[in-house]
Length: 185
Image (tube, rainbow, N blue to C red):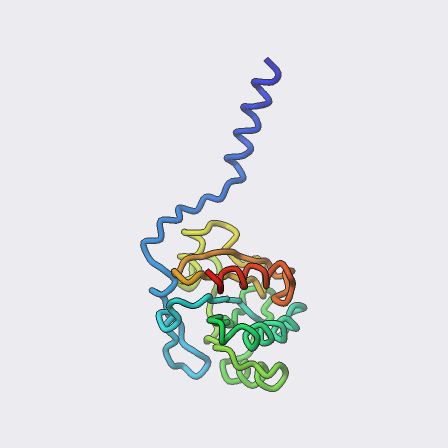
């Protein structure tokens, strides 16, 4: 009797912690667009058949040094088909208070950023940018940024392959192994 109860409880717990994402992918990442820091359209459809790393960023965060590592992986893997996109957001601790011009100046002067950067957007909650709502709908809670420098990796088919929290550095073996595998597929 006890083993049956244990099995039932195990199943219940498994369902409680499974990803609630539907993964139907009625849309792909390519169906979304942002504006870059200069106000020009940045359509993700421009990056079809590439691996895309989308990271919500902030200039005054404890993880801000990850800009350097994002730039390094951009430079290392760009010719292999990697696109890195920084998405400034002020959602966490008001750590991105600057306007687009200030953000651009900071990123270029302090970190030499050359990868695409979007205008500041909301990345969580009811007013989140449509891309982030799509990410949550199709990949579940792990796609929702919990803090700045949350990373979403889009595969060459326009679907979410993996997500990484702020504490995972873009230069870590864990992160680059996923990138390299996706770039080769």
